[in-house]
Image (tube, rainbow, N blue to C red; front, side, top):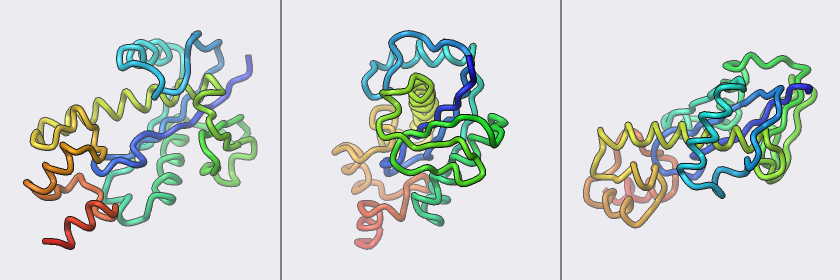
Length: 190
C-alpha cells in the first residue's frame, strides 16, 4: 500500500490554549471505524489514537496563543502545517490530504490537496483528527492545573458559559488568544 499523509487541526476556534496540527503518515491498512474525532466518544478516540500511534508516523505542529495573536489564524494554520510536516519528515512528492477547503501545505508539496470533510472521508485524515484531539485535550488538562478557575479540563479552551464567567471574574491569562473578538472585548472593557 502506498503511503499517504493526512492532516487535520484542532483548537482553531478555542479562546485559550494552542492550536495543534497533526500530520499522520500511514502505509498500512487503517483500523475499521475511524471517522471524524468529533463523532467519537472520548474513550473511542483514546483507543484509536493509541492504535494508530503504533503503526503510523505522527508529526505535531503546535502553535501557541501568542503566535496566533501575532500572525493571525490563517498564518497560524500555515505554521502548524509546516511544523507538522517537518516533524514527520514529509517529502515533497508524498500524497497529502488536508481537511478543509484551503491547502496550507503550499506549492512545495506537489501532491497535496484540501478536501472538505476529509476527516470523515479519508481514514488517514480521520486518524490525524483523532490524534490531534487527544493530544490537545491532554495539553488542556495540563493547563487546567495551572488555571483551575477556567475549567479547561472540560471546555478545552472553548467559549462555554463557565469559561465566560471565569473570564469576567478572573480576567484574561497569558494562554488566552487576545486577538479573538470575545477576549479582545473583555480587554477593552478593563
